[in-house]
Amino acid sequence: ENIVDEPVQPKSEDSGRAPAGKISPIEAVPLILQAMDRIEQDDEWYALGQLGQYITAEHPDFDTRTYGKRKLSDLVMDLKRFETKKVGNQLHLRRMD
Image (cartoon, rainbow, N blue to C red; front, top):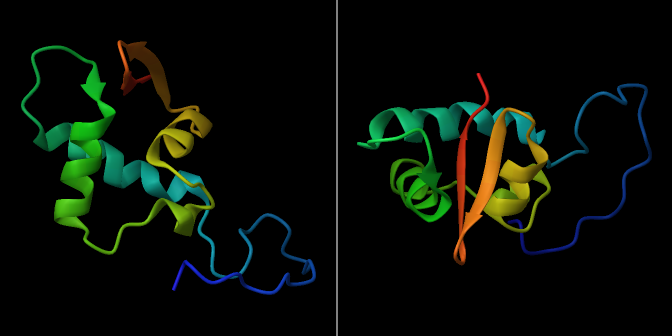
């Protein structure tokens, strides 16, 4: 369902909401936090790949395009709730709270 291009909808009076068919990226925060809580971790930094694997295992219908982003890295970098850093070729993130 996310593969086809949807026609552009005219802006409604509800400009604070995401466009039809899209969910605000902030709605993904609980899924990411849940993954962090369930993954055994020695420090506060989590590998994005591991988080993504957990999220898709627990929520097979999860698709970053639903949140208006092409990749999970684009999604988490857009959220101010997480700090990111590169370790080699891997992106890691941690909670900012």
